[in-house]
Length: 328
Image (cartoon, rainbow, N blue to C red; front, side, top):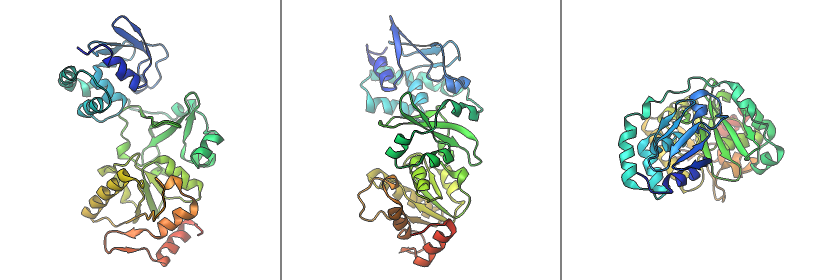
């Protein structure tokens, strides 16, 4: 049994709003889109504040508090959900440990949504000019990559697509907050790269954020793809092999540098040739904070990190610029 307030604090952190009636909280089902492909228009989901047991009488989604956290935040598994609870909230750990064992028996029996139609993006709007300016992107570039906008809570809707361009889902990113949600939960964004369906040939610049890809395209620089985060999966590395000029341009902060080192090690291990983007002495977090000249300088001075440690020659980069139509 959870302590009074434990379940409510978890729901508040997940931004799931409900109404309490006695020991139960009623709300719109947080997994309705995942289960049925549409939002829950009539609140049909309830959760018990002491046991954490929950059930949707409409779509059939049910489980306990731990499985809810794992599903809703797309954490990858129950152990990750337990870690999230430990790091973010003070809850009754005896109850969490007990629920971990209970959830293991049913967690993977939840059916998965098998199709995702383009029409589901139709409920969102074009990115407004003011929001595009705030992120140093153009509306035209947003439209090119299919990035949308939800005005009710100022949220970016960033599509997750397969290599062929099929819609797998989308990522919700708060404009003024660090809120990130994947829809539907458990969508396998680690098996694809943002922008890959637009890439054809030549240089491939790997960054963390999809909006950094949109930013580069807004400046006339193509070839960008994003891993949706600092961790680049084995499946994503296989996709990078499509290019013979891979440039690592993960974020210029401690997390990004650590991730870049880990990715460099893996690429070397697999014998994949690559270059590392040169941020130089620029005090920026990522490519999204740089102008066109700064990005092209960083590309020109990229360090070759496999065969020999040297920078790209001017003739090599000139060939890349000609192929891509860039002008320094």
